[in-house]
Length: 161
Image (cartoon, rainbow, N blue to C red):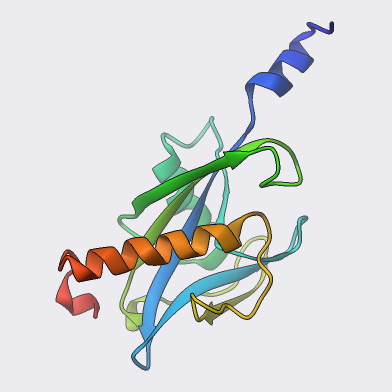
């Protein structure tokens, strides 16, 4: 049995990250922001990234930092939805990713493709029109259900709609 520090680190430190489902209304249609990743695994995804333990005080900070870095969208607040984990969700290894969501008026979302992002697109959250990498096809319906639940309970400010 190998008990070197390198093997211990691999076992003790899975990939930890955050993903963001950013919603807006365009022409009275709900849309979600997707990014086309410029690095492997390449493809369309919710914006997000990996925790940097040297600079991120929390996963909330990771989510806000990565959203700003990849789309140039700076948000004051996100809400946690659910944590997804397991050995199959990321081809780079065992990982855990916390899903967040936010809803902003369309005129307040100046999203652009930024660092490590080839393109962005506002898509129908029920039929995004792209194959999503990682397990983001599982994440998106969970974020959408959370948003709908909040709308049904009247917990979202009306100015957003």
